[in-house]
Each structure stands twice: as structure tokens, then as C-alpha cells.
Length: 325
Image (cartoon, rainbow, N blue to C red; front, side, top):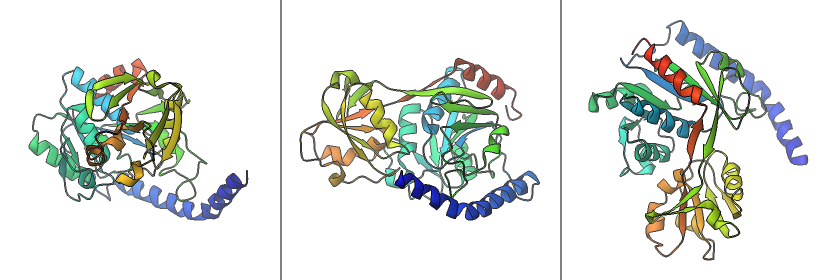
């Protein structure tokens, strides 16, 4: 109780600063709406997948599912990301051979899982243009994050909702924009069965573990039931990953790390021979570490987005009617 009281007191102390932050957010958005700041049209439909809060909410799995839907219906999507955690400043392609220290961890996972061209840059407009130049057959862009990147004109806005914390704007709370922003997006995707206006339900599912050093060695998570494993997660909400593993009867020893944590060999040394299970995003950054420990049991738990079937119908209808399309 004392911990939560302390956090609440800090939030209220920072509340005046969050009012200033909110004013800046409002003015910036207003300037884009009045065309005082320029938004750039890249000539093909742009689908922005974002959220209101700082940290993970399930955007990347949703981007993967959207790309999959588009490819199933004969679109040729490209994916653009900020490349958070990477050092690249200009547009750069992210592939399975890329260095996560340069392009970030999520873009490499997106490239491996989607089969789509993936480009990263802090400037999303520059990334979109570079992608189109290298892949002229691309006829739709999906952005992983970027709801607040108004310099890129968009045809469809999708906001992922996974709670709003204390409801305050930064720095008093987690919100990057006020909750009223939800009324302006084209669709809200709610994770974990939460209710929201215009909402489509989404859950993240995954019940298979893949051995890091042998992709053909796939086992059900339930086969680890009763076994002690070290669960490693450097994501927005590590607790979700730990609880997901525990739901299969696994005896989880949790090892949470900050989101986009740059792992070192020491981070994965636990002094025993118990299996180590990590998220797919974290695995991207641990290739070298695992390669240097071929006898260790490293496993990866991939997850995918399961969506309300109505979402697919809505997306295709909306995209077919977009101006760019």
C-alpha cells in the first residue's frame, strides 16, 4: 500500500507538468490540422497502428496480423518502424541479417515473421519513401507505432488499447495523448477483452516453444509443466509473459528487464542448467550469446494476434475505400 501511495503522490506532484505536456500535444496536433505543419502524402495507402500509452501494448503482433491479412488478399504491404533502440538515423532496411543495435529488435522480428520489406527511421516519411524506392511493387504501408507522427499522412488509424494506467498524461502518467483521441481514430483494438468504443477484441496466443539453436525442435509449452524454467523478458510488460508461461503449469523463475534491453551474456547466467525461455523479440538480440553457449537450453515462445473476425472485414472495406487506394 505504501508503494502505491508513493507512486500516486509522485503522479500528483507531476500533474502540473503533464498539463503543460497536454497543451503542447494539443497545439502540435492543431497546427497539423490547420496545415501550419506539413503532412506528407506518399502516394499509397498508409495504415498507422499505434497506441496512447508509452510502452508495449501489442502493436507489433497486430502489425504482423494486418500484414498477413493484406497478403492473403493480394496486397503487397511494406512495414515501417521507428526502430526504437537502434542507432540508425537515416532510412535503413531491416532484415533477418541486420544488427539490432542499428535497426532495433522489433523490425528484425517483423522482417522475419512477415516476409514483407521492413524499413526503419525516426523520420517515418523518409522511411516510407526509401521503402517505395527499393520496392516499387509495394502498394500499402503499415507502420508499427506512429500514431503521434503526424508528418506522415495516413488513411487508416488503428489504436491498440491495453489499459491507460492512472489516466494522466506524461510525465505524471503513461499517456502520450489524452483518452479523447480514441474518438478520432478509425478503429480501436482492445487487448485482453477490455471494452472500448468502436473496439475489436484482440488476444495474444502462443503455446509452442521453439529451441533457439534448432527451429525444427518445437514442443508444446505444456510439456514443460512442473519444470523449473528461467523466464526472460525485456518487453513493455514482462509480467504478462511470466503469467502466460505459468498458465501452462511451468514453474517460472521471472527475470524482468527494461523494454528493448541490450542483453549481455551475464544477463543470461543463472548458475544452473534449467531451461531459459525468452520472448521472440528478446531472442533477436541474443543470437551471439546463445551461439557461444551451444549446450545451454534456450527456448523461444512466439506469439500471434488473434482478432475479432469482424476486424478483417472492416479493414479490407476501409482500405478499399481509402483515397489513396
